[in-house]
Length: 393
Ligand code: CUA
Image 1 (cartoon, rainbow, N blue to C red):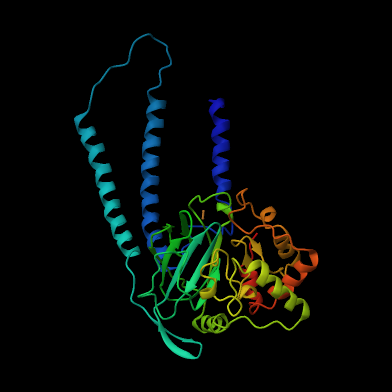
Image 2: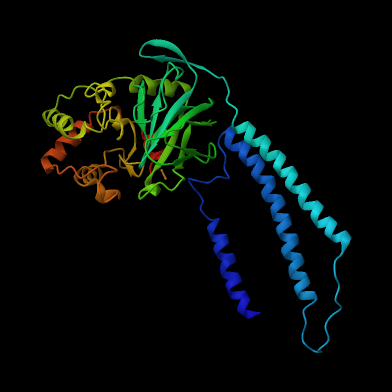
């Protein structure tokens, strides 16, 4: 008996400790939007039923083991019986009924999750009022997420090739900014391998597949930041492919749109001007900055294989959402950004051949300073609330 108690105690303690995280970012059991609630409304009762079944089966097995144990005090076999018609019927019918009921509710839930609302919100884009049917085009890539906003809608646009998407009104990376209380339809694809989009507080997982468009949706009830993670193994830095949904009030979302549709401002500081020249000669093959190398010009290059940097400073994470752009006091985390520019593969593992992720650019320390000076001019810094709420570990 002693033999079993110790491991049983350890397993029990492990299970209890595993439930201890007070503020688990990827907790699937605290839904914050209607879609996640739909899933929760199914999984809660299923877990409850499964728990009751678990207790009955394991309790019953334990009881039988204890009650009918053989202490070898005699050599006689216990009475041998074969079959019990009534019991067998019972333990066939009860699980069948349970599974059919769960099956029906699962199909209802799946149908709900795959139904898309025809909603619309008024939005001012570049001074013109337009009606946006909230949707975002999502591109998964090794190892980060791109979010593209087409405020005129995507009907008639060719989204079949994630490598050559039509120019969008707003392109951002790793942080999906959405208005609260709106169902946002996601039209998702991949540039390379299969990824899976998962922001657990807002909805479940859906695969992102090259050459195919998959549909998903998100809706946040409250302005907040919801953490997510690629959840399909996609290569070396799969675990470093994170994202966040930043849900804003409609007014804040409009203010964000107003900023994001602006092209990059022309730098005035000498270091930033030098940094821009370095960007144009070294970085512009992969990164786009609107107003410098627009998407249309870059289409034949490797453009869009790396995040659009037009409003880099308005985001708070980079490199697949694994580094904070800002310190907790709101100042730029220069040390990390410089390390990234100096030798990215050392900061975030990519393939040895260097065909994925940002290569080590071989910039001198002065050039790195200049590039940082230029990057600092790109976009409006977010509020301290956003800096704090989006901080990654
Ligand atoms: Cu992308 Cu895992």
